[in-house]
Length: 52
Image 1 (spheres, one colour):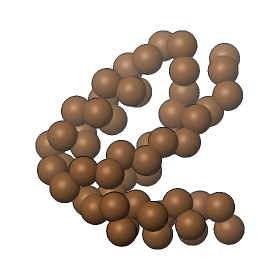
Image 2 (cartoon, one colour):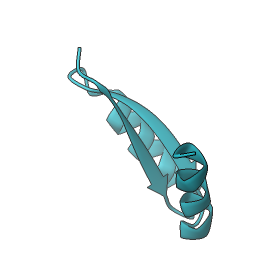
Image 3 (cartoon, helix red, strand yellow):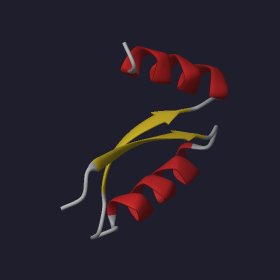
Image 4 (cartoon, one colour):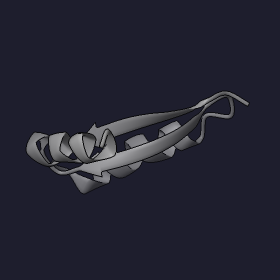
């Protein structure tokens, strides 16, 4: 199996984030850790926390 990729989905629409997440998680060739944010500001804060 491949390395796990960490991805951020930043979108103000929860339904769209769910569609993107489900699509990515259905990939049999790659594993993902998915972070979600409703705005770019929240996404940036998540990324900064993740790298600490």
